[in-house]
Amino acid sequence: SQMVIELTSLAGVMAREYARRAGESETVSQALFEMELPRSAGDALPETTPGALLALADRLDLLVGLFGIGATPTGSSDPFGLRRAALGVVNILRSFPVLRDITALQRVRRIVPTGTVSSYHPDKLSEPTEVALHDALRKVSAVVEENSTLGEFADAANALTNPINAFFDGVLVMADDPEVRNTRLGLLASICELAGTVIDWQALGTAGR
Image (spheres, rainbow, N blue to C red):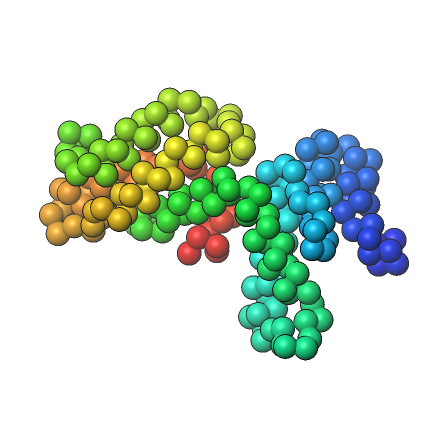
């Protein structure tokens, strides 16, 4: 850490080397290096999903924390590099569109009350968008395994993104009819349960709620 203080350009580089020497996997070591990317406009972006997630978490933590205490940039001053951090977030998300797909899953989780049973009767689905979401969930469930990595899950779950958004645009989840409401919530809860095999919802809780 003292070396990084003296030579800030080594941030990430030293993290990777220390991780390797500590016996961490190459995946972890590379993610720690990529957490610092991009360092400036035009710099290289993270190439791996773990690295991109760490880079996003680091920048979002910086932005939320400093905006929270009122340390916002002014027209002439940005001592904490918040504009650079925000630009980094935008560029990383552009480079990794599957991370935005995770946002669709968080949208599902936000509306499902705690304790909702993750089951439903498909024959109770009648609206086109809810039937389409059921079909998409069935297909994704068939290829997602318990030991799937985040990257593998994100690739498969990409097929859920458009059906989820169309579902919310096309139906009222909290319908007046209890049977309709419970069926739709059960469908959404089933999606949460599937995602929960890979995504740590508790770790994402603050961002999701």
